Length: 158
Image 1 (cartoon, rainbow, N blue to C red):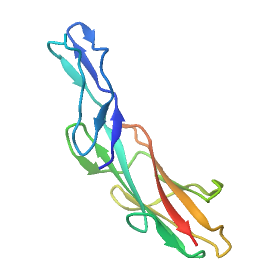
Image 2 (image 1 turned 180 degrees about the horizontal axis):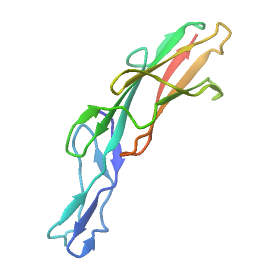
Image 3 (image 1 turned 30 degrees about the vertical axis):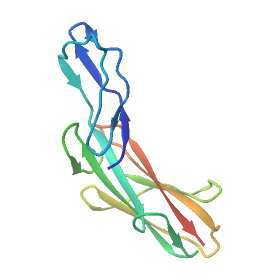
Image 4 (image 1 turned 90 degrees about the vertical axis):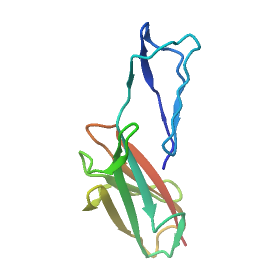
C-alpha cells in the first residue's frame, strides 16, 4: 500500500472543526486529531482516490542493456475511504512519459495499452545509442470521480 496525505474535514455542531491535522493513510490505518473541546462529530466527508502501482520489469530498479525493450506496467484502482481498492479503468486512457538521465523527455505522454480492467502497459524500445543512466517513467491517470495521479518508477540503461 502507498502512504497518502489527506485532509479530513469533520462537521461538528459548531461548524467545521478547524484544528484538524493531516491524516496519514498508510496500510489501511488513519488518524485524526481533534481539539479537546470537541464533544461530538455530526459527519465525516471523505473522497475517493485513484491509486496507481507502477512497475518496470518487476519490483525495485532494474538494469537494461541499451537497445532493450522496456515494459512499464500500471495497475489502477479506485480506493474508497474505509473500503477497499478495486481495479478500475479511469475516465481517460492512462499515459506514460519517460525521461532520460538528464531529465529530457524521450517518450511524451503516450497512451498506454489496456491489458485488463485497471491494468495497462507501455512498451518502449530503447536504442543502442540511448544515453546510459537512470531513467524515470511516469504514469498519469485521471478520473471523473477522483483526482488525477502521477506515479514514478526508475530503471537504468547500461
